[in-house]
Length: 345
Image (cartoon, rainbow, N blue to C red; front, side):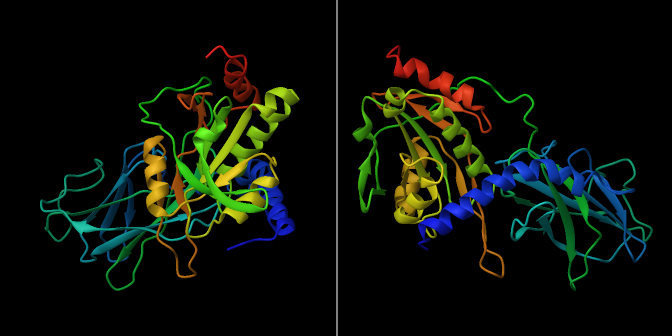
């Protein structure tokens, strides 16, 4: 879908405002769990069921990470209800439909907590069900979620709450190393008023900041692009001329070269957006160690895309230098670029 330049700039500006406002407002809208709530990120949680039975829900690993598969486990004792799925919804932000279908485990449940009996009041062994999913990551920092257990017959248990994502404390402040194949690539991009194939090798002699994201991302991408823009503003005109920002879209179904050009133009006109088909996107992301996964659409057709949030730094020879973590201050971005601009690497 192509957006007009004013409309796209307005949208991007609103997103940047929301980034800052959301950090301040979210904890005030949801200051903490209500009495009796249990944080699934800390332990397994237990609830009484309407028929007198008991439900225990647990998620591993804990604390709940981002960009990692999660195992969901439900244990039922003293109840004839059969859980079929666990639905996950964003409390602070609409994240679309995220469901973990449940399958009955082959063996009776081992209690997840001392409070869970091995047998219910009916004398039957507790039943265990498990599933897996990966929740979307489109919000910087920590995000509050709720989990609802669904049962056959459309019944559901009250919601459990938890937080995903680590706080920014402990974030690495230096370029992180990784095993990256790298290599040249070519993808369609808007170069001024025309769309043409654009290759990484065209920017030999320049330091390149490579970022994988998408224009419908509500928080993480605008945050990263804003910090990159601030870093570019701290460079001299000559230094800035020797830096190229490449934004590769992981949402080729919605992003177009023209839409990317209009969106990125709000942040810095020299940023170039690239978008290929699904196969091309997957190949480039795999070569440069980026992760992304398209989530199922909800009933309104909305969907999000999980994606790695780091910025890859590439030297003037097209070689991998390192990764900047999401949220790296502009001063750290400049510090990563300066050795390349001075020709020390």
